[in-house]
Amino acid sequence: MTLVRRWGELTRVEIGELAPNALVVLPVGSTEQHGPHLAAGTDAIIVTEIARRAAEAASSPETIVLAPTLAYGASDHHLPFGATLSLRIETLARVLDDLLASAARAGCRRMFILNGHGGNTATCVNATAEAARQHGLLCAAAIYSDLVEPGSVDVPLPGHAGQAETSLMLAIAPECVRLERAGPSPGHARSLGRGVVVGDPDRWAALDGFTDRPQEASPELGAALLEVCVRATAAAFERVAALDV
Image (cartoon, rainbow, N blue to C red; front, top):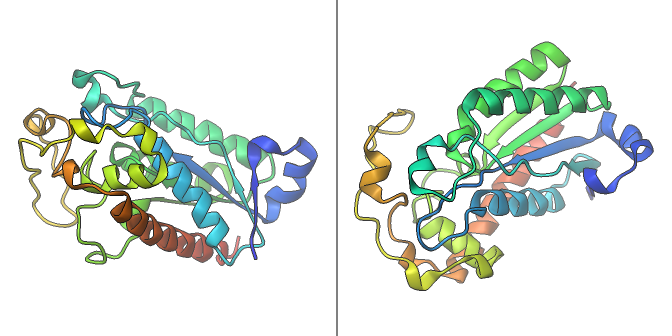
């Protein structure tokens, strides 16, 4: 059974003892608008809970250390709606580099950046390569929704403040949901297929800052989605833990 510890609750002696053989998980979220019905901390809240539950569900390694969640991300595309505290992409890259360098200095050898916000994805992936090259870390990164097998859930995951995220928040932090204010997004997200990323300057305005049909969210759906995400994330932790350093 995996021992789960929180970095912020450990002393320097304890971290020094655990770090070399532990998988250290750094959850990364955002603080940004999530439509008229979800709290601005949604991404950070969800990724923190998935990281915790996945660490507790993992069968290996012997120890997982949960670093404090980085609650700010690259969210400039949400600034026009208000309620957003964003880092520029280059700032996020520097922050991640500094944190990973610090972890290496503290004795960490294996890291996992668990991301909860789509705008962070490319920067998190780049940070892993730099951490390996500059600091000798074995470092992985994933947005939790990409760990879920395509087709295994019946709603768009994660979306942005849509049915899936709203359901997850109803299961995790219902006090942060104003479901009476939820309605369907007035627009439709455009896609050119899996693997194709499109920069569309009018997308978020057309969507009114959120996707699909959050009014159809439920705590029951959220609990089911949470279980799927946790199981997939725990399996990813185990795979990274099995790699040779």
